[in-house]
Length: 189
Image (cartoon, rainbow, N blue to C red; front, top):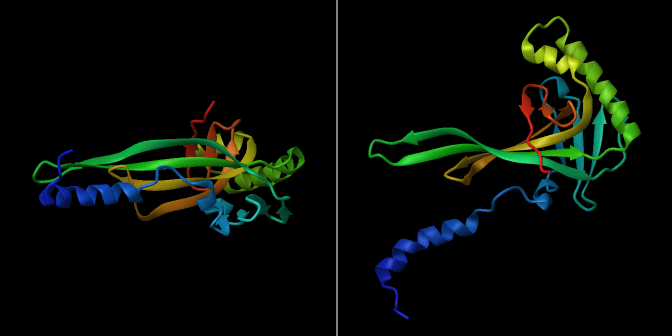
C-alpha cells in the first residue's frame, strides 16, 4: 500500500472531520431533550410537554390536558430554498428540511382537543376572506403534532437553525397548520 504524503493528509483532514459532524435527519432522542414545544400565532396556548424518560408527550390547550402519548412520524421532505453562485463561480445550495410528527392521542382525547382547536380557528378566521383562512376554517382538525424545520447549507445543518413548531393536522393528514402557515405533508406509506 502506498503511503500518503503529508500534503494529501493535510488537504483531506478538513473533509474527513466535517463528515463526522453531520448527522442526517432528526434523532428521536434529540427531540425529547426539549422540555416543551409551544404553539405560535393563534395557537399560543397549545403546548406539547415532552418527557424524555418515557419518550411520551402531553398535549395542553385551553384547559385540556392529555394523557402521556407516543409520537408517530408522518413525513419528511427537503425543499430547495435558493442556489447562489459567488463571483468566482462556486455554487452554494440552501435548503429547508421538514420533519412532521403526530401525537398519538386516544380517539376521545383527539375528538375533545380537535373540537377546541377548530373552535379557535373559526374564532380567529371569522370575517377573513383569504383563501388560506377559508380552507383552514372549512377543514376538520384530525390531530395534534409538530414539525421541525432545519435550515441546511450544502446538505449540512446550519448553526442553531433547527426550529420546532406545534400545530394541528388537518384534512386526514394531508395538511399541517401551525397557527401562522399551512403546509402540505408528504407521508411514508
